[in-house]
Amino acid sequence: MTTVTLIGTRLAEAGEEFVYRGEASGCAGCPYRDQCLNLTEGRRYRVAEVRESGQVLDCAMHDEGVRAVEVEPAPIRANVDSKGAYAGSNASLEGPCPYTGCPSHEYCEPAGGSFDEEYRINEVIGDPPHDYCGLDRNLTLVEFATPKDS
Image (spheres, rainbow, N blue to C red):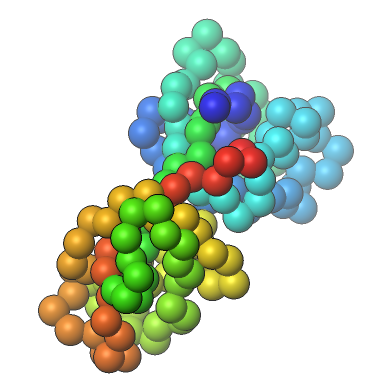
């Protein structure tokens, strides 16, 4: 299900993904608050369509303004414990990883994911992009299902 919202023109491109971070200090008193602040904080979204007929509106937070787009919740790809990692099962993230240079780091700490939540696995992708885990974890790359309460 898509939702119409306003985002910065630099992000307003079909297929672009972002994590909604909620209200910023510059949002106070903005006449477009209701159109911008209508997403779930911390959730990952994908731009489904840009409303080309809409105008670019001035914004205190986005230097090039904002425009109307349709967004939908985006799935999160993540590394989870290999034991029990199959489509339809529930899994949670293993926890923080200090190895920021690892090719799997973005999947061990995915944008829009939370360490204290469980997610339903929609698809098992397979082996993670790293050759070995610096924390000696046995991981599998999966795609979590998008939340139903979007």
